[in-house]
Amino acid sequence: MKAWAFVAAALVMAVCTVLGTVLLPVLSVTDIAMVYLVAVGLVASRTGRAPSVFAAVLSVALFDFFFVPPRFTFAVSDLHYVVTFAVMFGCALVIRWLAERIRSDAVAQRELHQGTAALYPMSGELLTAEDVGQAAQVIARHVRLAFAADVAVLLREAGGRLAPPAGAAPGLALDDADRALADRAFGTWQAVGLGTEDTPSARAIFVALVGTHGRLGVLAVRPDDPQRLRDVTTQWLLQTFAGQAALALERAVRRHAA
Image 1 (cartoon, rainbow, N blue to C red):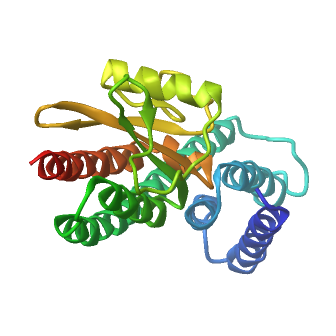
Image 2 (image 1 turned 30 degrees about the vertical axis):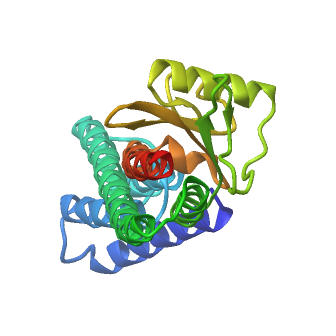
């Protein structure tokens, strides 16, 4: 987290302290505590976890020092204020958690909307693909655009080896470890690699391409930002792309066979 977020949190708490000092003749100490809580909510809605916790701790410290008798000391004359501190800190953490949850849900919804919108053009282009190689090219291009990633479409050859279809660019370069994961994804019919339970630290995710008549191959995706594919919504969207891709490749294979 950048330092500016902590500086901003400190400035917001400073403003609350000045405001509380000005309003102290007309507000109770409890009212001023509420002002700090509102400020912590503002910080939580605009920054990350660490600055929000920092703001929560700072708000309790400033409230104690400037407004709790005896003022301008961290000593507490009334133990009831200890409960107030605990409630303030707990509420601040809850506000931070809610703000983070809302922010995370908003990001997930935006990702889902953008990804779904990108799925329609791919489906339209795949309907006009003349062969398997062209279909693979269309799939790789749209997945690359939707997920900001390097992509490889691998189909099972007659000997059982997974390789890019004839007429398609090689795409993402795979080493021996990547090929082992691709084979495992194909063999288990499951996604493996980055963000999954199977080898989550891998540099790419490998999703089995499963059509109506079985497995055709594997979609390999290595994102520019690995954290992006650790999100459940993004993985679900990638599975949707893989499902559409598998159906299109299956149609292309049947058309070529005919």
